[in-house]
Length: 385
Ligand SMILES: *Cc1c(COP(=O)(O)O)cnc(C)c1O
Image (cartoon, rainbow, N blue to C red; front, side, top):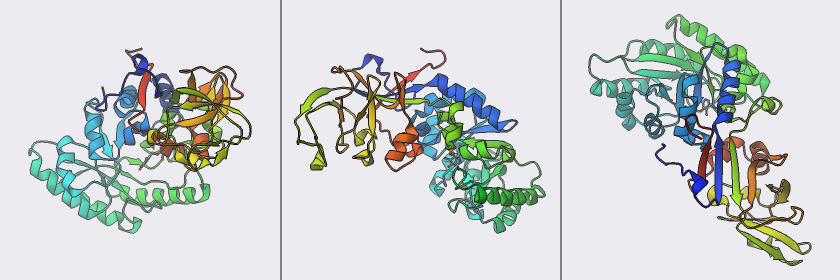
């Protein structure tokens, strides 16, 4: 279905693969709908649906959401192949050379400056039949992120000027840099944004507004306005750990044991021989490494995988294509047995936030770092098995 044509793995020899549970995705959507209340959902599916598969994820979410958000024109075009009706917003700044195509497809760009707005209007005018509706833009205000968006002091003048251009203002937004880590500054930022919105409403009374990401949606639902802009929650991971219980992780990452080996006492394991077997060790080799997106930063950090429902430590460095795990305490293990890198097995679980933390990163990064070499198996998709 998607351009990358996710390989349906059940028929293939299973080496390393990701299972995407669309039942869990639907569950999380319901949770987000409840949190959002009357606000609509802007479903953030950038970076291949956070590594979950753009087209497949979008197809499952489509009915329950208002708008899809991706990063770039390329992602929007890929999404449009399967998503025929919902509006698609581009969250990253676009290149002027992309404007005409963005306008031609009716995608909604994020605009931070009057210069961008003018150039976009000009590009759109060239390709637009006179009878078609005005091209839509989304105007962003920087209330603290320091990335995209106009300085608050300039917002009013820019919006005033935009209303005179042949453009339609789809919505006004801002983005929270610290919603999951700094409540005080987030509250201050939200207050500042409310103030700006009130002022702008004098110019554009009915313009829709959105500011909350996943963490904001959990912690500050009173600021939902017209839409919440959520990614991580939909994939079943809460940026606020105490709220994890209400969600179901969508992604599981597995690999088959490809080799069993015995390493004598004192023998080095993996590059640099950073790990020396303290005794004779039974190990299994798994066909997943940093070229699959299993972070090399997990080397020597006490990461484990699950085999037979037992935590098996990753020994030495993560290599490009393979890892070596200690199965001394895993009981009887055979070639082709299933190892779980991320997900549950027999009552135990390795969560994405745990793995991300061990690798000194965040679950967003872990997910979108999974590479095209890993096969995808989409389960519980409606209309399919
Ligand atoms: C990625 C992104 C989001 C989604 O963030 P989550 O924390 O995954 O919910 C929301 N808004 C913008 C502007 C983004 O770039």
